[in-house]
Length: 325
Image 1 (cartoon, helix red, strand yellow):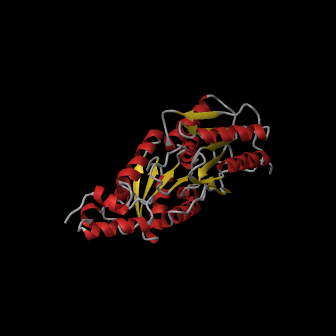
Image 2 (cartoon, helix red, strand yellow):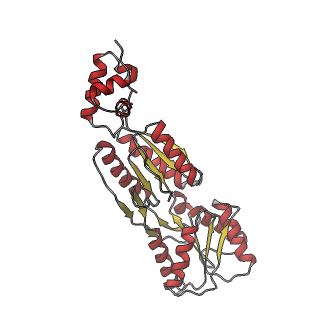
Image 3 (cartoon, helix red, strand yellow):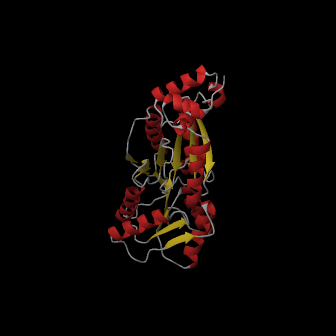
């Protein structure tokens, strides 16, 4: 004899909402309550009618800004390998750097897909955790109520400016693009902190990204006849584009102009002039983020409010000249 949820709720002395959550394996319901509800449903041969079958493996979704350019693709590849080794499955959703998309995707995966955990990559959006789904921010800010694992990119940019000044560089330019505002701000702060001249040039391309942004940014600097001896770029692909233009224009890296990138992608060490870059240690970021996420998924009563910063490091290669020698 079949029984409806209202009757189950009455017999279990809980609300209909609690019965519904129990059948969908919500983490809001204790195991004891869930088992009591299931036993009642079994008694009336109704368990299969209401139970949403739970997949045996942990399913984690990574909400990423993009899958272009190599940086985020590398992170997703690392996450996939690490989650696979832990016996789980990684799903990927793309937000296109839109904060509202992050919220929409988050609500979709937690409310309707009912994933076990969420990783939000590179977003500062304050997502309201409606279903208490275990969530960790990576390379972004959690606004205080969701765990976050980031990198010390600001400190590394300060280190780059300090080292350039120490090695005799006097006029340093910065090339970024529309999505690298924070790095530009850190550059400006570092230049002021180390009393570098105010004639520095900051180029932010609004039309271009990746290598094209670097190529066009370097072109703009040279068209203005700005006397520079170093360029810091917001990420390595921009540096690669800038170096291409400089070479085509007769400049030698690093003898005429030193160039520094960020992220330390694989290509850096294989360029004609190996590129000095800031290594963000994303492998360790991924590992720490998953450690927190799995602790939260494995124990519904586990609470943490961590904001972990993984140290970045400057990887010196041959694209920077010591002008004091």
